[in-house]
Length: 429
Length: 150
Image 1 (cartoon, rainbow over the protein chains, first blue to last red):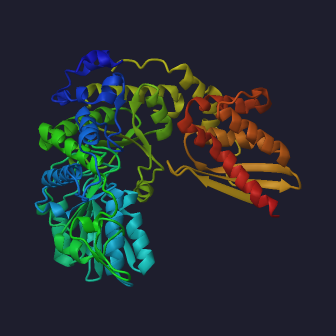
Image 2: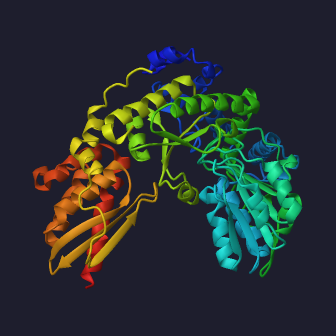
């Protein structure tokens, strides 16, 4: 990338000798039309949503220009083509997340709908009064409120696993909460607010030692940033969103075990999900259709498949390495600044997220000052109010990295924090 | 690291000296003894919260205080609102709230009528921050609605 794109080019030159900065150059920014059109923008909010490469936008446009029809109707060649595009997308995405049986990938609007599907369809049918549901204190509201409300609806007991002081799931406390009454254990692959990477396989194995509860993993911050192999994780359900991984908004998926998906009731009723509709009874279609009522979102599925191909082209190991290098760089620089506190575990145990607070400056004020310098960060509770209460902060500032970020973005972030400290004068360190 | 550039005029206006002064030294912050009504609001996007307590005597607001935590804009706005509201009638407060809302929407108004509250006019250039400036006024409105029931 040309150093001239940034207003802080001088700082980039000054810091390029930094040892931690090695390997943080990004050659991918040019693939993203929005970033190309805004050369001085420092987009550090990919944990909220990623930018979209042109290959994704092109794939969606091409679908609408050449293949668009309502799939699964099959009366004419165009509809057959639309159906093929849809199933190709499903197979490609299933392969990407290590799911061999692609019929067990249910397309949803995103992680939120996928988790609500499990909480409603499986939960209402299987969780009874006196049963127990276990979640952690680091959940996004999408993996918290559905379980809380399920527990309230059926009079089950909700348990919230505490975190260690450095923001990891306390596995001893988790084990102590498990019993024969536990019906569901839900936890995130990666915390959206702290970036903590949870050991999914290890936690699943721990749960299996104590109970036959369903294990549900919120992968919204997992699939975009780390290699995922669902079939090896030892869990029952895994949910993720397309828009955080270079795909379009409005598509995501639930991965599930076939035996569970086949035996649980459907989530929504309508077209496509039925087999025979009698006057007073209906039978359900096979997987995956049983859980995909209504006209499917083919164009977004095609876009997500293109995003998967784009990420495979870079390689997920390289995506993870690049983000960790930037995270370590930002972590080190921010920690060195007076008055800055970083929340969560050591940088090596985090995905591409730096969640921090600056003494004397509210995160919203910080975000506004940064915005004035072209730096986009998230400021708020990150849809994780139970976690914020435990950190005893109302909000934090969060910078998150992806394939198109580089050292210049970290420079701009750190200079913006310094500028905010100067603006707020004697309130800030 | 290089020295940051000076803030833009918009940022200077948003974080006006008077706003930072009210943020650092909020007026009328704390519980109000003998309050006759209370109103509280939460900003669901950031979790910030402000509660306003009032002593209403007939048609006149005798005293106003606030509690809560939040950003410079929400805290300064609460401090300035409490300073502006004490001793005013319900009708005067409604008019001021309407005028203040119009200023934040960017409408052309006679800002002199707002006194010190004019300092928050820079917020209109930052739509994401308008709800921060309105929190205290929404809490006052909620408190006044409860006081109506007395």
